[in-house]
Image 1 (tube, rainbow, N blue to C red):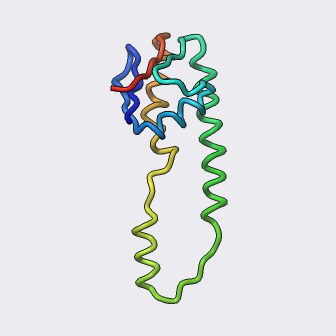
Image 2: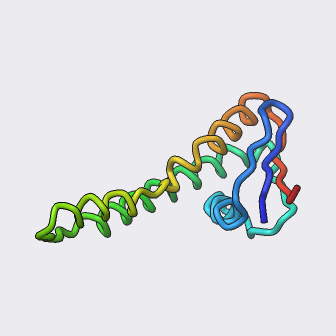
Length: 114
């Protein structure tokens, strides 16, 4: 499933469904699709999203900070390649930009499945 976020002042942003739902819930919404946030509520939604992302980032850093000792250099290189993951903070950038644009233009943000 995909979720597409829309507003009149910015290009559409499409995300995988699980990531999109997570972002919707981080903004303080119930997670229903389709859905919308009205223009007056967008600053609070953006604030909740950025705060949740900061908390998520801190938690992720604590989880990955544990030190492992691997004797074989090839194992280290293999682990590095297999553990490359696009973080939630990076995935949220287009949505954050859309929300900022909608706040500036004072327009609503809607989302649905394409």
